[in-house]
Length: 273
Image (cartoon, rainbow, N blue to C red):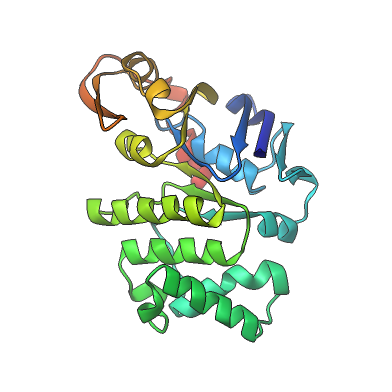
């Protein structure tokens, strides 16, 4: 069953297109990774789904609701968003940070049921011992797990994650990916994640969307998307693709050409800033 339908979305600034007629259906309770070079439009696509950006044309449907017609709080009741791990500042405790996820349902005032739900989420994610610590005092890996816990507290069917493993060491990258995979498997959550590490995407995803120059150029299971031909076409990199336990593993060898037009390389960074 489809939970997110992205239909012919276009987005840009003046004459510069960032997303060019993007269409894709995302199945319920699936883990979908979006990959591609810098400037491909990955983060822009997430922000259109979350209504942080308004597409110039096209339609986005989440659980049969048109996102463009929703108010901000309605979007937050349907879609949770986990930003990048860098430059996150919350002068609050971990418990208070996760409690923010309840606001779309009850406004600024919480009750005992909300507090019990937050404690439950913290315990399930192994974060209850950090509940009274200040968010700003924690490591990047801990902060990212807490932002995922906050998104889970929103109790939405869809969670968007924008490069949640950036700036994390390999242990914390695996920890974040395992947590997201567990949410998909055990909580019926649909996760749509922007990720740069092709091997992480391969290991954990049900499906991969590969983007270049604002378009989806390949979509499917990891084995069908992570091919030598696709990697060279999209990234301009020669690579070998091996298989281990049924999972493709990408070994980059050398650059063969520039993967994206120079005019598009920094567009995604400019949108974030």
